[in-house]
Length: 151
Image 1 (cartoon, one colour):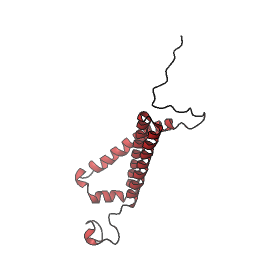
Image 2 (cartoon, rainbow, N blue to C red):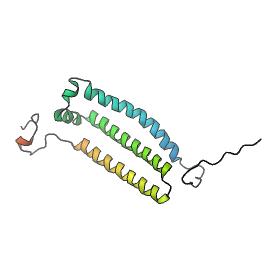
Image 3 (cartoon, rainbow, N blue to C red):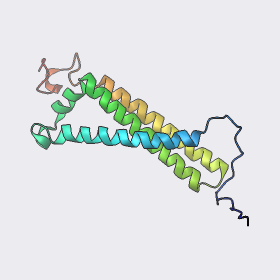
Image 4 (cartoon, rainbow, N blue to C red):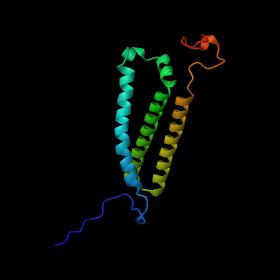
């Protein structure tokens, strides 16, 4: 007795890949699992430090953020959280596009837009974290926050 399993209903068919090629879907699947676990640790650590230590929510102001972004440890923490979250979200959106977009052209446009958005946000976010200076040199004293030495 033989049973035939029908092909899954997919909006499009893919050409079979060559043996020995890179299985990008497998690596995307693994990335989602690993980055999800790391993001849970990073986000809860971020929330704990910002909301539970010292004065809690009352400590959150420009000086607190400026102090955190001047520490290399927190710079790496925040950039790692940013990169993992944006790539994780972009990969999830790519999966949704693959599941629901029926036209090859539409899939390409959507995935290109997702890639562009992820890249732009990663670049801008990374620049903000590593170039943030709450006390820029040459600024007038009335524009500087109270914790800057020139004010």
